[in-house]
Length: 174
Ligand SMILES: [Fe+2]
Ligand SMILES: [Fe+2]
Image (cartoon, rainbow, N blue to C red; front, top):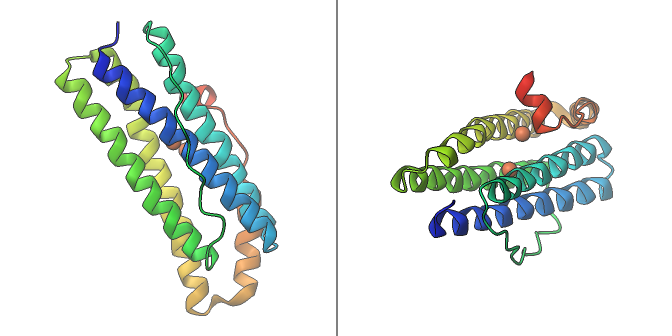
């Protein structure tokens, strides 16, 4: 059985994962609107990942005999000044999510909930990857702004187009 506090906190985290999905879907459609199809496709994969994160938490609550109560998800921002601003936002948002996951880990320790602590380790690792991914693309966008020109942006768009969605279960066994 989950403690009231843990159940509450994971329900809150489901909202954050769904908000993340919503934010990246918004970014995807914005990239589409400025002709960056590869960026759009990359964010669409990210949208799928975030939905999988939400479901992972949701399934965990169910597995532990808790009750899922879905919350209101805010509307995301609809446009950005540039792709660079988009990825700055993405990195900043992932850092926020990392802090939420860390708070959950702290709570699991406080409540001596070992199962929740274990489940959260997947997310601790995932957040390292999320911040790394956003940082790598942001670094390239900075280079492009510092003189790479639109040819490099075109190349990066092509590179991002290659990303395919890998469900969490498959990621685990890899
Ligand atoms: Fe996530
Ligand atoms: Fe990821």
